[in-house]
Picture 1 (tube, rainbow, N blue to C red):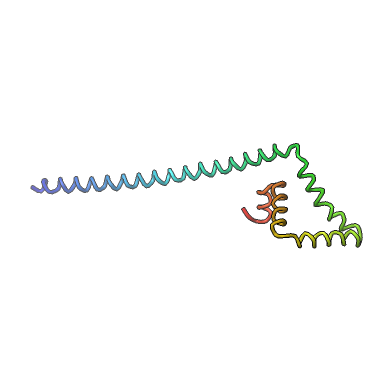
Picture 2 (cartoon, rainbow, N blue to C red; picture 1 turned 30 degrees about the vertical axis):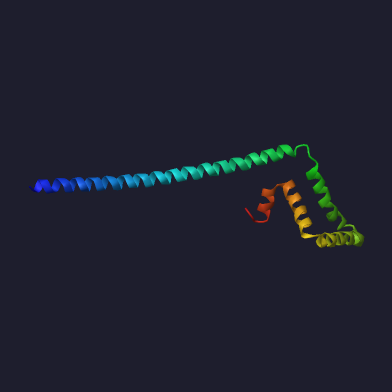
Length: 128
């Protein structure tokens, strides 16, 4: 008679234990799947950034845009060493730029950042 009571209780305990094991396995599989998905996303992002850099390097291989901007930004530097008349021209030029509308200043900054690399500019200014 004791055997008749123990057997159903043992089956019940066994079923409960199997359910717990299956739940634990499912949770572990979910964590593994999430980790794999995160790794895949990170890999695709890294690949995308590399692909973008390569495309941009190819596109600017025959462009004079970077050289033009470098020359343009060098002019105030050179004029600053040309005495009072040069420094006066530079100061007046920067005052005129400061008086420009904000949208023009932002557009100019965007053009420069796009030319020299937006990621490089954002790293320079501490944003990533």
